Figure 1 (cartoon, rainbow, N blue to C red):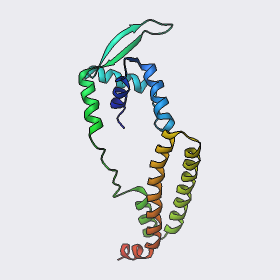
Figure 2 (cartoon, one colour):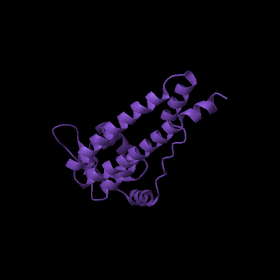
Figure 3 (cartoon, rainbow, N blue to C red):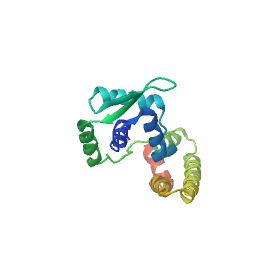
Figure 4 (tube, rainbow, N blue to C red):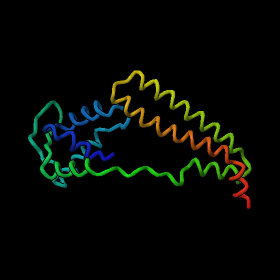
Length: 174
């Protein structure tokens, strides 16, 4: 996810301070994508330099002056283009788990043990997500469903790989 585009999208509702943007970000996206204050301000500086936001006033406070930022027309155009463009599907043709399976087989270690441990780890994560989904609001339910569907696909791959381990081992030792 692009932090810059996300902050621009949040600024479309009206000018905000960096602190307010961080609070709004945390409210909308929760702990799923932690955002630090330094990241907010460095991103705002980059957006300012690129003409996507502008300063919209400064307020004196108990600490440093607080700059308020507003999205520019160029920023609005940037958000519109970003929202219209599809995300690239995450295709994992060479992932770490597959690499571990191959190396376990090549070294004579237990690839089945590796797959069993991974299955247990996936099932544990799925239980945690299901509990969070049950107790959560609609936003939590949607984000948890997305993660659960990916974990389910991984589990199908684990089962398929387990069923084909002997064939894979034979191919690797030719």
